[in-house]
Length: 274
Image (cartoon, rainbow, N blue to C red; front, top):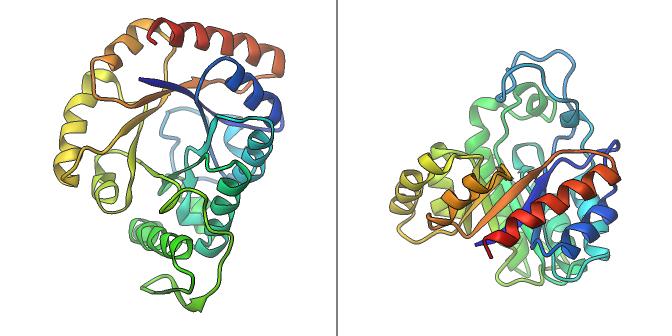
């Protein structure tokens, strides 16, 4: 089983380049970072975690700027979004951002995607929350077309463009892996558009049956990465009994010194299971 890190990169925590170097130096193989463009002050949508929304949600750095900085100072580390909010992103500019990250990283980009939960946030981007699932599916199909076709063309309900040239193309073929985030409601998206399922903090006791249902829907052995996992060894040990490709430890957003100390703990836990 592989071990990586999931976190929120903000203007108040460790800088992207310093974090990327530290993660790679400790033998962890991937870094996935969260995205929120903004958080509306007046919000009806409850925070899924309960209670007040943590400040990190409205202080996140742009993921592709931050990951490019990480890619420039690392050589092996997978760099990706966990997750990019495709319901809030133009597909043409997003295709270019991911392809550019894949190019500058030498083929190490991972495109983790989700539909999002904050209705007011997506409404500010002109997205109707009621149709965001269909919108995300269509945008992902358009992005794949832009990545793989020399003259890309797409005509759908939400995305429509005549043949266009769009470069760079990704280094990875046919394209960077798409890790589809979400619960059981995302399993059809995993089946149709995903290269992996990004399971968000699903406890190991619940994950096994969910993997079986997801793969039954997909009709293939889709790889599984578990996002935002506890560093408790007893929890990690339970994941090792499941058919999981990777776990991403949750890294709290802290200043550099505190972050490096926490990463040492994560590396120690990972080392016990290699």
